View 1 (cartoon, rainbow, N blue to C red):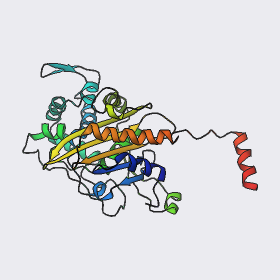
View 2 (tube, rainbow, N blue to C red):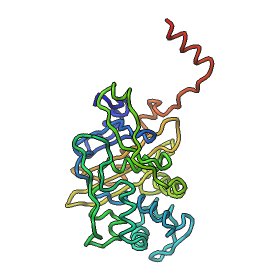
View 3 (spheres, rainbow, N blue to C red):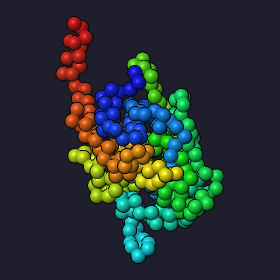
Length: 307
């Protein structure tokens, strides 16, 4: 942990408190892991992603032009667009989208976005999660694209995808410096560039809406946050996910929270914990932009350094 950002780690530990689970915070501009609370959970074989899979499915549907972001569709007696479906995590919308995409296309985009492979670069103990080779026996592709049936997602995989959405489409290898020397010599490593730049403004309103008025409203803070919750039960373990990023401010972060039972676990609760991380850091002025470089600043720094 000598390479972690101690301010971020303190905020994550305080926010998670006594809950079972993990908090992973990443710099989306570089792929550096700033903190990883409860590494065993964060690096293990993964858990069902629940509704967090819907972000990847939305991007796939937009890429294939199966849906239009502002088009309203009638499903089960309701009319809704993508923003509403994401904000309220409407399962039937994403099950139908998955069926229209088909398992082959869903698989292609899932692997493109990092499912089934390690998100990190040379991080000891990291597992690659799992993506099924065939549609799930329970509910087929519709259950996969609405609940993440049979997928195993790690917090690092979700953090890497959230970072790509935050930064405009660069999927970084996540790196976890182990010392201050490694932090000082840190070099970002790009895994691949995702052609999702034009699509991000189409999914972001639904992710913002989740926080403003939808399933993630417990994460709501003064600053703009975009995210996606996930709630489900895997082999009698209640899971709560929230993948997010702050959308304003001088410093961007990705915050992923996974709760794994023991105490109540749900996506809204995970969103509240992430909201506390942002709140604690905001109170510490962590997100304040660095002062612009001016002649006065340069003179001041030169005087400082000559002493």
